[in-house]
Amino acid sequence: MAGKPPQSSKPSGQSAKRPAINISANFDEPTRAQKSRAAAAADKSGALPTTRSNVIIWSVVAIALGLPVLIVIWLVAMPGNDEDRFPRARVIEARREMAVIATKAQLAYRAAPGKIPASPDLLAFAVTQTELGGEFDITYQMTYDRQSGVLTVFAPSMFADPPSELIMVVNLGSGEFTFNREAPR
Image 1 (cartoon, rainbow, N blue to C red):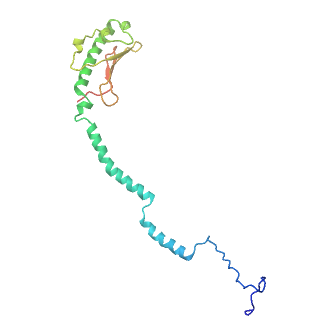
Image 2: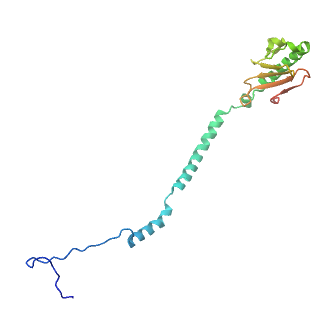
């Protein structure tokens, strides 16, 4: 029917127009050109930094810049000599004065063990400032356990590092005593 004229429902006096062409396009599937561009972009995507590589790069930069800053702060904050952190002369004086307190407490214990209060002070053992008179102003706190006959002497704020106090425990009956820290060398 190649030579057949087009059928028209229009009156014969009007010119015949061709009907419009309907194109049905499915955009769900990419075209061949889109596939080739996507393949070309995938080949080049390895050169671009990823989120993971950015984290690694900035972590290395932070460590490289932050570590020297932390070291400088640490060096500035630390005292120049160990005596500021561990005051040897003050500790030696406190240990000597605690030994005087222990000796006087043993004498008071032998004289009248029931007369020693639970929270004694220096006057309870007849310790004078001339006997303790050292270079440093050290305060002492004491507790006494009547059951066991143990006197505990505290010298607070002696050290910068914990434990900050020097503690001596004395068994007044046997005369044995111990310190919570070793003697400075």
